[in-house]
Image 1 (spheres, rainbow, N blue to C red):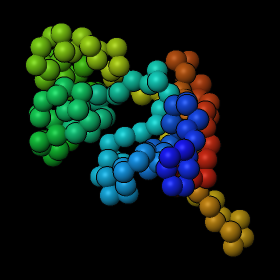
Image 2 (cartoon, rainbow, N blue to C red; image 1 turned 135 degrees about the vertical axis):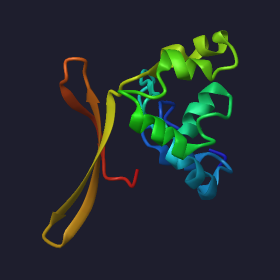
Image 3 (cartoon, one colour; image 1 turned 30 degrees about the horizontal axis):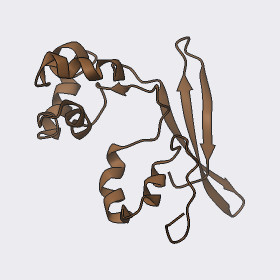
Image 4 (cartoon, rainbow, N blue to C red; image 1 turned 90 degrees about the vertical axis):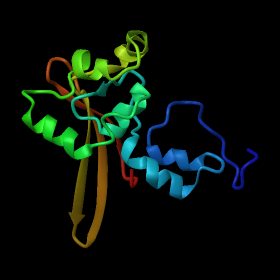
Length: 152
């Protein structure tokens, strides 16, 4: 409430990364630097190590290894049979200790369950974008969790 304008947080998880802009002193410049590396997903969502950027992989390890050479990471992924880095081999080795890996192991996966669908809709002369957060269940069924017209 001390902000100008006043802002009352809903005390729930964020549903859009643009909510970071409401943090005091955060600013648009910081948001634009961080935006490619963050997302707003339910707490049970896991990081897909097979598709996460090198910078995000390094954020979990606390080491600078995958983010230093994005082209090398892309080449390794292109030549890998399935996934690179594998969670329990290449990625686990990037941690300073086995205990450090154990603390985040439950937050990692080699598949994705959450996806973002962006739809551009034109009706006559009106145009708008619709964003949908989709969840794929273990059975393969896909259902929408959230829809918005926001820029994020």
